[in-house]
Length: 133
Image 1 (tube, rainbow, N blue to C red):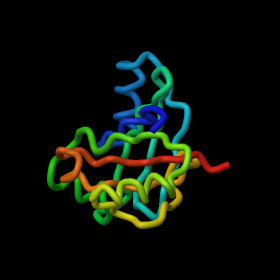
Image 2: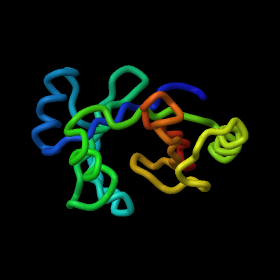
Image 3: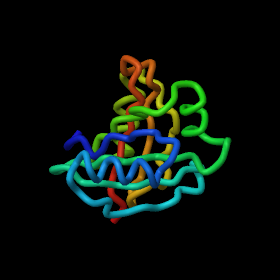
Image 4: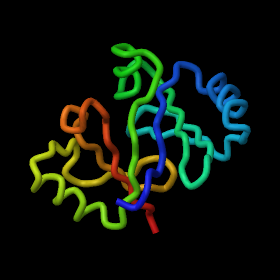
């Protein structure tokens, strides 16, 4: 693990959340994008070497919609940057962690991503991310 890449926060209204977090962090949102495979719209703000990722469900299906329905707005996940996501997936599996996807998939911000079950990390959904080169 290299560093905390970002903290993902599930929100109901992305536009409103961007405006709020721009004030909170005194930084501008530098990027928005949709991740169709996850049914989510994202926005990113930098803070030091890390980022805040705001996540809005595109419709009533998908992981963010499910999270918002169950828990409401709030911290959804913590993402850690890794150098070799494939070896990290194997390392986690070998240690008995439940990896939610055996192979990384393309996520937001030009990253390969993989998630570790939150029950294996004290209730925190853990994301591994590797930049796509």
